[in-house]
Length: 399
Image (cartoon, rainbow, N blue to C red):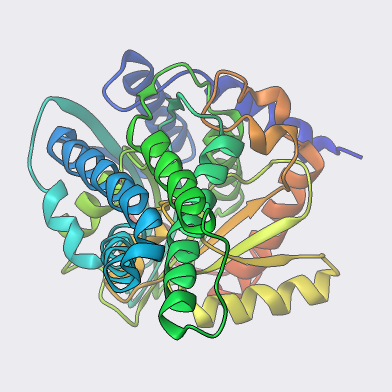
């Protein structure tokens, strides 16, 4: 059952659920709304404008995916006639795909170029008298639509991976010579893998999604947390960060981290990220990415302890290949960043990145539960409950 807090969260999310792709009028509107709300809550607030050019990266990705489609399709028939070459082609596709889909840190250099797309990160800050620790509450404010619905995108990604692996296995069987697979196996698997890669290569993006689940619900959750934190310990700096261009390969998070590299040292900075939070279903902690690399072992342990004490049925998941999230640039810099999400493979999740991703898909009870859980984690990090912290007066609201 949705309580008063859940109803408040749903109303807040509904006010922010409109198309807001980076660079659009909706993007500028949501930036102003979020900045105004943080100002009302007494935070020092500023906007950090930035621009970027995604076209070179998109051209590279299309060529890589298109080239991979051709290689996999060609490797299929070779499993019978020249299995060694088939194996080499499949290995080349896997190697390049692993670098791209795993969000390798060196790829960030391609996103530092300024360009025609302009947006902003929104930052709110409260500082204790002598801050030695930093805590960041983060959610991205942009949305986007794509020509392939989420189930189709995930199916294409899985089909491409299985196609490449299937070709490699078929070629390996031929090389081993202990069992002769059907002659059609390699060509069929290669064709299906190539077709999946081609579907991903031709996918387009737009500004038709209201972004209810992704990510108006998370914006409302962070605003609720920001409202509940009225005082902070003297040794803490609290930052509320609403990033732009997360849907464009996490450019906003990269730019913010590069700009503030000296202000948020590794070891004394922790981040709680919210993405897709509020979709109906169990709460989810996104704990790993790439080849099993952990995002935030320390924060994960605290979050799980709080969940057990609150008797919350929380699931842990690994970030799917080719899916970006703002926690990844933080992990590349060694900063612990734990992401809160929710839901299952239902209607709300299937509508993400489409015109059907409306605020009506959010669940107030789930949002309220995530806020309470996140509050417990923040209180554990602060060392006291929100209502019991005795601190010096909050510093004047200066950027």
